[in-house]
Image (cartoon, rainbow, N blue to C red; front, top):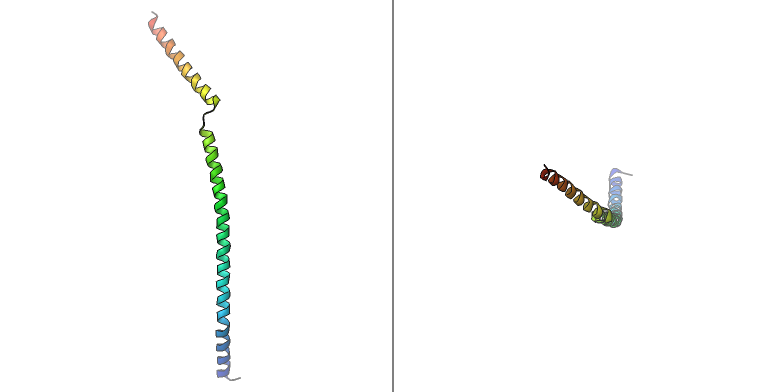
Length: 93
């Protein structure tokens, strides 16, 4: 085979094979993008669930229960008692 024939044959093979290779690459990219979008959607769903659970726990922590209410009343009575004691000591000679 002469050099011109070989070059022509290689040129022809190259240009005949390039479009299927690029089409395959585009399909591969589209498939990869679709996979990444699906993974992103799953992660977004999981993140929303975690955020919801965290918000629920924070609201439960902020709610005052009976122990907190009774503790607050106890502090008020205790401070009132200390104030009465100091006031009584000032009045007595």
